[in-house]
Length: 181
Image (cartoon, rainbow, N blue to C red; front, side):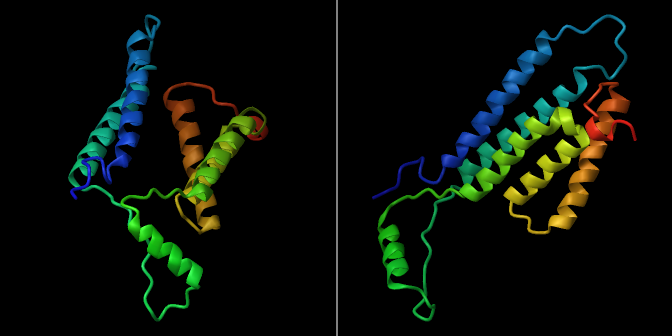
């Protein structure tokens, strides 16, 4: 029996969601009212870069998933591994299922918790602190297990974003507890 074309291509959902977000961003950029005499690069510059990059990434993901479907394989145990009979029976039962999906709920919770903490802390703690926490949580969600290194990179990235928006674009991001320094 030949598997359906969609087998292993459930990842196509991500580029379609990304393309929908980029389309929403494109509509916002096209309908944005920019006052006369606005200095370059202007308020449309960064959103345009983000939406172009988003469309490129979405297109590359579509090509990848169409050319190389990712069919999930159940774990296989050798006869020498110390695995319980129940785990072995579950693996054998999973092998009979034609396609299974796997979710890493710990990663989802780290990313969602980081986003929630960012939203709650943005005004009182400021961009640099809240952004660093968000970057750190996303790194953790993606599997990084070097907390000190991640904190250093997160603080650096958050500070660079703060400087880019504050200095290059003249936008005011919340400074929070670091405002007087």
